[in-house]
Length: 190
Image (tube, rainbow, N blue to C red):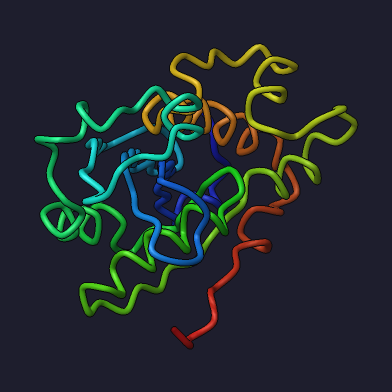
């Protein structure tokens, strides 16, 4: 059993995105992966490459392996926005460095006229509290230290799947109920 009874009332969505750059400015999503988790197991998932409507910078192309040709026929974010809203509804938004992934999705949804508010949980910060003492809390290095398989590094589905495994480990280590106490709600301003 992964979660103790005090955590079962939460549903979580473990999310990872790939993008054309940082959160600020006109940068866009190129890939998104979401795993809906009931505190025990993954109960639903969504994954898609996304056409950003602009060239993918060479550095990003090299890092992720996502090329302009790969996303040429992919949907634009507006085509998948409803699926993103639906799968994350009434769920805690979980990501490794949650500010990046959450704010990127919030930005994309804002451009479409949606206000996007979810409680968030950062697996970086939570890992530091529940499993302290590791030399690095970057996803790749932490997964290596914890023997968590990480297939498809710097791709949304691979990183999100590894974050699911990390999150489940955090649930198992949370015998004092820290996770419900560290959930944060983003500010109401856009």
